[in-house]
Image (cartoon, rainbow, N blue to C red; front, side, top):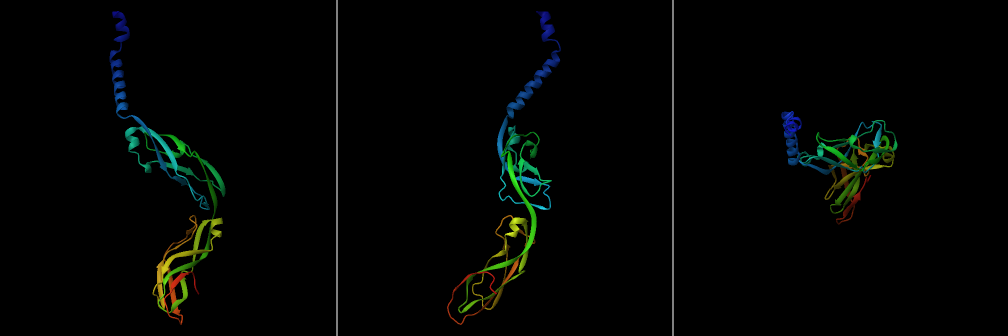
Length: 233
């Protein structure tokens, strides 16, 4: 019995005790900081978009990333620390399906990606195009008694728009925000902004638009509303 104890129990007792201590410490560390899992919704980030292309998909879904790790790390995880990135180098006009896996997800050290939803998504691309369109002022309000709109001018009168080729070609003008011309007698100028209805088309150099409203006498008395005027000449 003594030989058995010496050979199998007390042999290398120091190493065995150290191993036991390490195991106990590891167990205590895990017990104090258990593993947990949460879901984080993040936008898809596109990298290396070709200069000649525009993304023509209007609604890009957010991605739900399920991550697992020590409870403290996971609960302190900020959405800004999780990135879902897609490399668009080599993209061409048309539709393309991209896979979303853990390889496309960047998370802090110590946190593991367990699931990505959706695991695939489709993106449409179109050639980038630009053109000049007319600025159409919008005028609202009530005139002074006996006056009406004689002329409405925009400065600049035309602006350049940029976006996916098919969408750019379908747009004929850019509109201003409503200008309230209530009480204008003679001539008055207003500074306002412009926009295009398509969310994927943008103004090349956005800046304030100067709208000048000129009124004239009608030869009649009475106050009447201004019908949302657009480019009276």
